[in-house]
Image 1 (cartoon, rainbow, N blue to C red):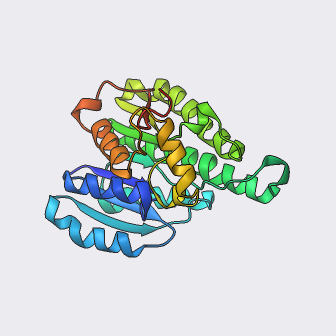
Image 2: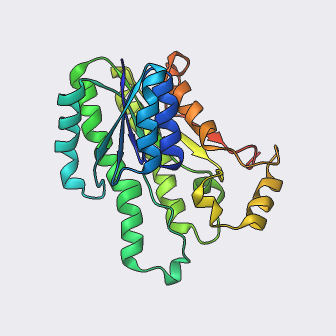
Image 3: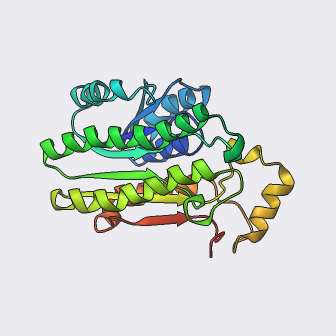
Length: 244
């Protein structure tokens, strides 16, 4: 049973990924600062699909703790086949009025943490010699821009740049590295936009709707599976045609 580490696995897209992968027979290690009620329910339900979900509490913004955390996962579960860097924060704010501490927190959790986590996971993948899959969560905002999301957009552009170069570094070892760029997904994050704004965004999309968390989860499943074996260095957009 392949082990897949999913960060930000307690809610939203991360939880949907953990559930879908467990239903497909993967052994999922869901990482978050706290276990949510929804994740607890998903862990109880997961045994029906052949896979399992395990929760491990980690604050990924504490980058000094990452090496020991990855070693602990490897020691406990065995070889890590997949890493899904989904954890992140979507703090909104006009750059001119954002606190420097907010900017730093965004860059730390959305860029520094996944880069360092990937470093240590990839080291283990290299040592185990069985290849692996890395999936980074970007956003259409990285290429389209959006008012009030300049720092967030910068962090998501970093995810795509990181993906493309790392794919070239580790490809010879049979490790694929891809990014998924969701559009405005129907989650609690977009609920803060308000009904009218969400309808306006959906109306601009080719399919006239917002994609859902499971649409992203199914793309993750595809990239981890046999179908994704020759896809690397790619950024795959899941946005119901918002950027079409």
